[in-house]
Length: 123
Image (cartoon, rainbow, N blue to C red; front, side, top):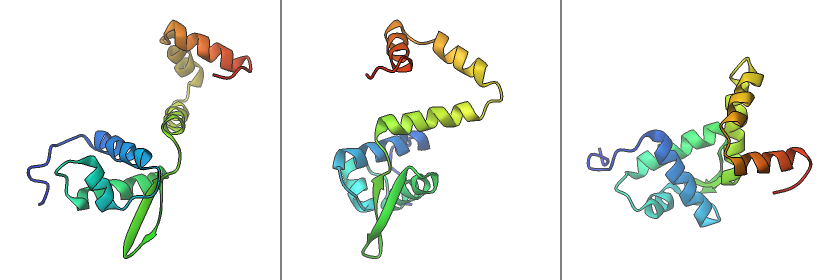
């Protein structure tokens, strides 16, 4: 009800915005604090729902804060992206084809970085 005038974002974009707010905070935030950090007209219940979904996915952890919870990301943006990449790879039976297609679409710079990492270097 409180979201009738809120800008409509696909849930993935709203999840990304919530995670960005949590990463920027550097510490646990309650749904109300996340709502404030987002600076949007989304209802606190909407933010709470997104945080609950992220918790169920293992993307955030939570600790008791009064009668509710405060949320904290379980990993940084790079770690989350890597986890998503692994998840997508595991969904396909032909991992070789997926990896081949992925590598063939890398930029020259990304290919150089990947090659360095595979040879034991660090980036």
